[in-house]
Image (tube, rainbow, N blue to C red; front, side, top):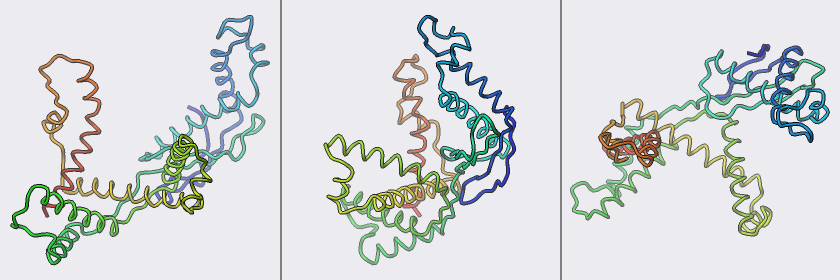
Length: 292
């Protein structure tokens, strides 16, 4: 493992931050390893792939390419070691900001590692009671009244939406800016791709909606924070109330029959168990809230 010095480290707004200095001799070792990896995939006329002599290879490898390969390896090693030593609960993709990286000097970088967001729940049982009382007063919640299946579901949906809206408003969330900005970039990239497929430019799209790019980003930020807030709030409620998904419930929805021989489709469905367990747990949590 690469040697380095970590300083000015602190946790701020669910983000681990620190500055790292890596000795020049460590960088040289990483550089040599990077060159060896690059040589294995280097193709030079007159030589077989991976068999290019080092002196010839160095003439065909740019300094920037070697620096890029070295940095990728060094950054990865440093981040993984910090996570292990600091026992961090990582929630998202770490970020590395170079301060000084040249082969002539020790490297200096800033690291930011997003941690699991902190959630503070309100009194969710009181929220449900208040929403039900208000709905009853407005004749939205009418237990015992004869309704058909469609009306009952519509009534249930209205009530649940009101509960979730209140839960969203009262829940406190501390989330890393790094997570939010990474999500904003993904959404923006996806939107730009869709816009181009429609034969438009981002400027035309924004103009048609009377928006500035910062307005769009801020809209994305709010949506992202609200999504994390409600999802993590429901997860925390499930934890507090010991709401779990039983193995037989999962097998039923995935139609898993362990007595049947393994087939590709069955194996594919089993890979989805984690996803469906989360979906079922969320559904059970929503039903729990409605039952209060």
